[in-house]
Length: 241
Ligand SMILES: [Zn+2]
Ligand SMILES: [Zn+2]
Image 1 (cartoon, rainbow, N blue to C red):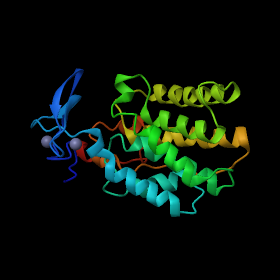
Image 2 (image 1 turned 45 degrees about the vertical axis):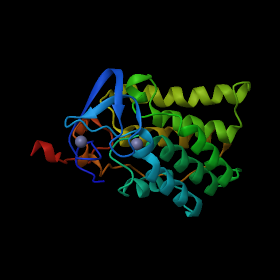
Image 3 (image 1 turned 90 degrees about the vertical axis):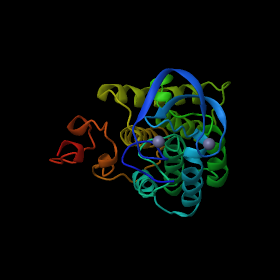
Image 4 (image 1 turned 90 degrees about the horizontal axis):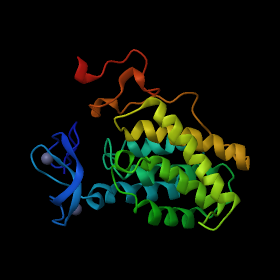
């Protein structure tokens, strides 16, 4: 498996998206299912193959780091080749970074149990939810973080509302910037807002960097460039040179 500058995990070519799902076969595991995208050379990679290694390594790392900084935790994982420029592995990564930093900053949770629960929930959130469901998977991941730390269920009153409040704040900020999707931009937005929320609601103060600068944009052709709040000042995207 190679990681190209574009999105196909098999050949690095750009992906084409369909509005309506079609029958596809995973190039890696052979599974037949319906999907919304193939690369221009016809490869399809299923969500399970896309995220299995990234999710495994994320959970392993989160169990052993003592960092209180969710951006540092998530960037450490984003630096690993198992976390692709975009993909559903971010739907676990964002919540895991938040749970871990929350615990290390004094939050009262059983981290191992919390991560296991997050894994089960986040693996149900497929790739492409931002565009197809109207709800970015990184925001959902932050919502799962808050649901776990607040003990929310569909039958709760206060915690139920807290979860909706957090994801609505995150989605509102994402909407200000518009698309196309970028799992780094939406991940950083989710973490910034969720970390502030944890302090506001539970008094748990995670460590945050003074500012967040993206170093992943060269591998994302659809980067918003200077319309993204995390694009380095004065940088030129390699595709624009
Ligand atoms: Zn391909
Ligand atoms: Zn597969």
